[in-house]
Image 1 (tube, one colour):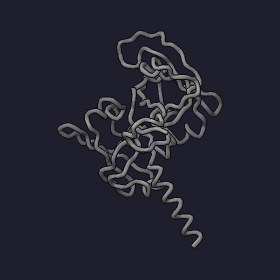
Image 2 (cartoon, one colour; image 1 turned 135 degrees about the vertical axis):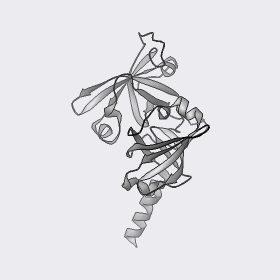
Image 3 (cartoon, rainbow, N blue to C red; image 1 turned 45 degrees about the vertical axis):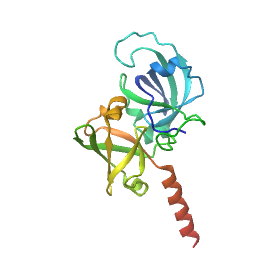
Image 4 (spheres, rainbow, N blue to C red; image 1 turned 60 degrees about the vertical axis):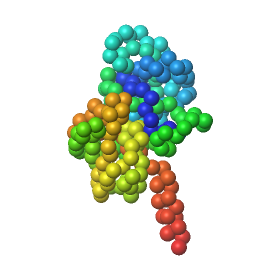
Length: 213
């Protein structure tokens, strides 16, 4: 379980195919220094992945993510099909968040790290201190997205400010622009989307109640 509050911007080292799966390696300075261990869960651009290996970094670059430890993750075929992880290339930045502690504050919203699909950045309108951005929304997910509700975009917990049949809008504050990949994406770039799990459960219960009526 995650909260959608990004802890660190990592950098992709490589994505190595293994049959219909792949091994993703990410350089993570702070997490590697903070005793991340084999078997722990980390959300990478909003996708819950399990750490299968850790190494101390051997690089000493000056740019963020170019030094520190490296983390390896298995990425299964279902994840590659439903998310943008299969499109990652070396040096691409990625949002990283460790699983939530049971005694921690829930500063964002309940995020499972189970991506529902992908969207595309359609428009970006800069404001005085924030950006208004519009993403495409798969029509099958639109029923789970409501104005003032929550959605995770590349693992970032955001509040929906507007929604249509095949799009939604959010506002990005300066801290989000600075600390996540959302400050770096361009028109046409794809992002991972996870809708509110509570909305999905309510919709499922209503479907079952309707079918049994």
